[in-house]
Image (cartoon, rainbow, N blue to C red; front, side, top):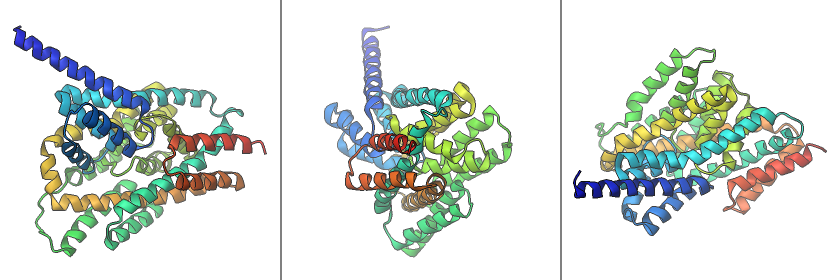
Length: 392
């Protein structure tokens, strides 16, 4: 091996270590949701380390909104790929996810072992309504950004009603995206030729139908993995939309979880840094221990790695596509509609008397007055108040 080759190898290893270190650190401290995570990444990779220009960073942020999956995790994968190639792509994603997944797995163990004991259960009693306040806050923030026209408002409302009437969340959000893509382009007199039909619309519905029809009603590890893989493949919008998919799949269709267990899992996800999709780890452990946690985690995060690897080279084409941009606008408002349906359904299940109502109202007031408060503090406060009220 020549000196020049050795020097290049050492440089690649150093960049890979740097990528791993940066995103492991971010994985430990990234509380506050995707927007906060991306802001932290911008500070690290643009302002502090100058891995890329701010303009290119913004290009990558825009691209993450065109593909399914958690935005902040996909931004980590994009940044790792930009800095250190294919190995950097893997290192950044894994290191960003690892702290949240590990902590969530530990909390899942303690929840399964002790979560239903009298001295622990009251904490979760208060967490459930607090989570509803966090989702409502996210609906308002995302809705203000997503509601760009009255047509989009109609689409969001129709999607919300369809979910409340029992239509699958996956079908609803993809249907909303298709409706918006055709309606908005036709209305505005744009080119009616199919310039670019997003890959998700061509292939994912078939994948959804195939995986759903192939799965039985009894438990199997393959069914668990494929259910989370399916969700990971179609999860447009905020990570909070995950709640709707999880409820539709594991509460309503499979019956593996109760709504209370689902809310507990989402609440635990709020305590941990990093992507909210680590909730999948918690649910997998609830269903089938360590093996279930591992398969759930792999299934829900794997599509993000694949989508970034496939689409990173064609980001300019995605950004220039009129059809893709209209599809994205419709999907975003559809995601808000789904979240509205989730609040109605989970609120009915969790607010059964005046005690959770008090926690929910107090939490809502807090998140709207103190807009920068970390979601973890809302959950912690709800758990403490719930513990106290449980003894009244």
